[in-house]
Amino acid sequence: MGLRGRPLVVAMCVGQVGNLLPHVVVQAIMAQHLMPLWGLSAGQAGFMASAYAFGYMVAVPVLASLTDRIDARRILIAGTTLSMVATLAFPFVARDLVSASAMWALAGLGFAGAYMPGLKALTDRLDSGDASRSVTLYTSSFSLGVALSFLVSQVLAAWYGWQAAFLVTGIGPLAMLVTTLLMAPVRPAPRTGPAIDVKAVFGNRPALGYVLGYGAHCFELYGMRTWIVAFWTYVTARHAGAVPVDAITISVLFSLVSMPASILGNEAALRFGRHRAIAVVQVLSGVIGLAIGLLAGAPPWLLAVLILLYAITIPADSGALTAGMAQAAAPHARGATMALHSTVGFGLSAVGGWTVGLALDGAGGPMSETGWLAGFAVLSLGILLGPLALWWSRRPVSA
Image 1 (tube, one colour):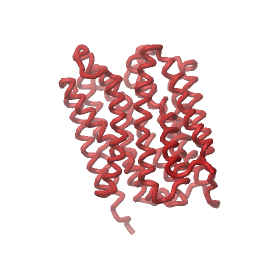
Image 2: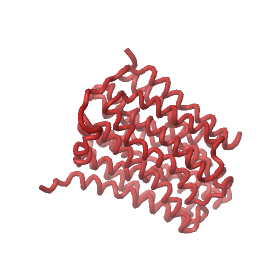
Image 3: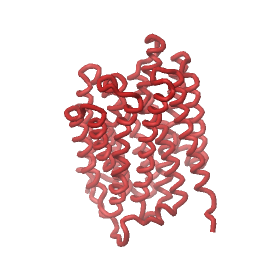
Image 4: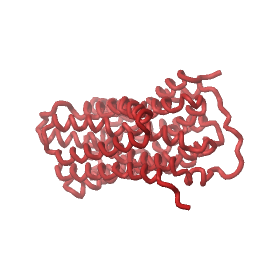
């Protein structure tokens, strides 16, 4: 029979955590290891870290759209395998900015066949009444996987060298491969016509509002994930090591807090209205991000508190945005709509990490207070575009 219902949701969340074990290994170790090793500037390091999202963005439109025609399980297996192989090969191939970026882009390309196709594989096997909370559990488990990625990557790099971080985290995707073997097969409904129903995707303004709002969310989230370790390294150096927690702890806590925040954010959306809850969270997140930038030279304990508050507001809109998109999508074009959702999200993820690096270089560098003000100002500007997208999606279409 294969996995169904609640056991399937649990297994998919566990599998996704395994798939995410390598997810931020580059971001986690680049400030202490890869930047000095290859003499990278902040802009170059931001580009390297963002190559994962660029690779994802290129592949996901095709791979996620295919899930409307074939069982998403098949794509999930292929993508998970490629992501695992690319991560394991990284320490043997990466020698400079170009080779490292190319390998990391290949890993991101593989993840494009794992994340949204995994979501489609899950929703195809659930009753419609189970979808909203199950989607939120799946998306919020992303944060647990990222937290483990930050923790394992930094500890292994510190103890055994940066290569070990890739070799060990690269084994994680095996968990998803086991899950796919336990899934019940699903055959999508037969379809004719073009691979993508353009009108059903791009003419669906309610769904597009969530897609664009998700793009703003990803810009902010990945910008912060890319640079949180480097920011705390700056704070630690500025205060001669007199900080309440180290970079490993702050990055792991930031990611762990994200999981319950995403679940509670979706519950708030169900209770108070999806658009209202998302808009309030995104505006509050922009304000907190700007406050961190303005107070970059403040006492470390205050910055730690602000970062943990930021860890609540940044992901609190994630589950609500993705569940809203899945519900607003036309049933026959759900895979294609998910493809657009993920393309926009990871495309702006790549832009976010890279843009913050460029802002740092342009305003004094990653050891400069003005550099971090510029970096956090970029993140705040990006997330404040989310409420505008939701407002636009509710306006009546002109005749």
